[in-house]
Length: 94
Image (cartoon, rainbow, N blue to C red; front, side):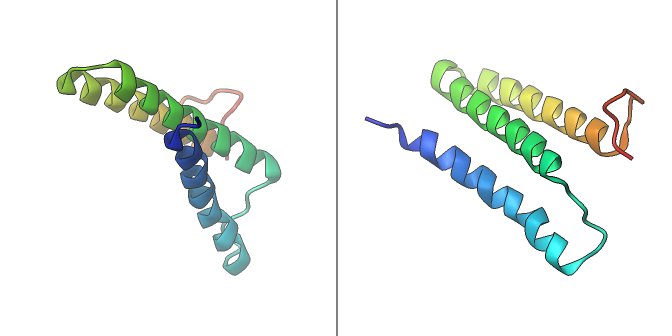
């Protein structure tokens, strides 16, 4: 039997990715390429499934919060690096 979370996570990611897609129709300030959508989709999917794994395997509420916070912090750092280049890596955005 398929776990409903395994279907819900990609649907939520798709919904989140609709935001920049719709914004591109109304503004010239949002200019995502196909690669941008693929990278952000992968980041969101990995984050969602990692948090799902943590919630299944970790019993302590305190540890769940800490680990999920770390995962979300890593997502934010990677997103910021890809968007504006906070570390000046070769993957930096603008």
